[in-house]
Amino acid sequence: MTAQTHWQAWHEPYADETSPLSRRLRLVQQHIASWLDHRSGEGLTVVSACAGQGHDLIGVLASRADARRLHGTLLEYDAGNVAAAQAAADQAGLSNLVIKQADAGQLSSYVGAVPADLVLMVGVFGNISDADVKRTIAALPQLCAAGATVIWTRTRRAPDLTPAVRGWLRDAGFAEVEFHAPDDVRFSVGVHLFEGTPQPVNATGTIFTFLR
Image 1 (spheres, rainbow, N blue to C red):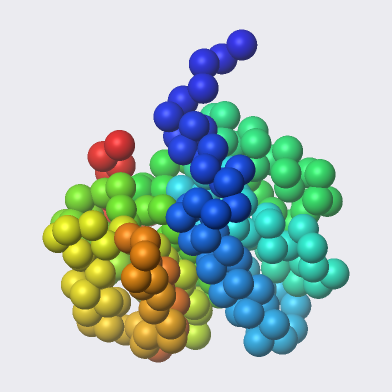
Image 2 (cartoon, rainbow, N blue to C red):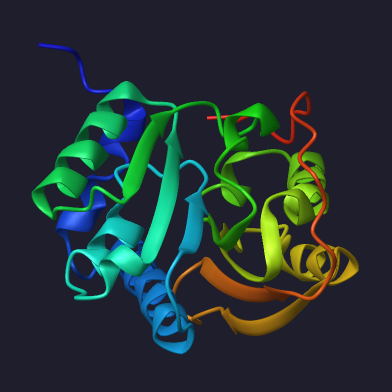
């Protein structure tokens, strides 16, 4: 058997419904479901960076009759997490999702998957340098279709970067829709609407490198 990596072990708190990670997951899922409820038509697209085992997106789509309106790509570097996400998608009959083993820090990984109507940056900003967070946000117009929604997360451990994150998003052409910062935990969840002009992907670019 292959030894479990720390990125696979990171998912273990999901088994506890009261854990901060589970609470964050439910918030993200609520916003994905709400976004689907408010977007009509077929052919919607989503890309999820550092998707892990896909609990957020797959967890929502598995219970929806209109799941096939949304086609998407989940980018994940860890092979064990890729296998787990693929198994979950297969079990839910979500052949409209592509689970791709790739480095989401490389813009080349997004070619063919963007521009997307929904961009998930969940579990990304807390695991990269502050400079890379700023660089990634500046690159989001390359990943977004016109009017796209971005859902992101970030810990608020000191020093709290979320005020800067929200400012960088504004500067990149995004309007804040929601920002959750519960008093009893350190996570935050943001939802932003892209009001700018989509940009072509620079397929040779690097936007972040994971530190953990």
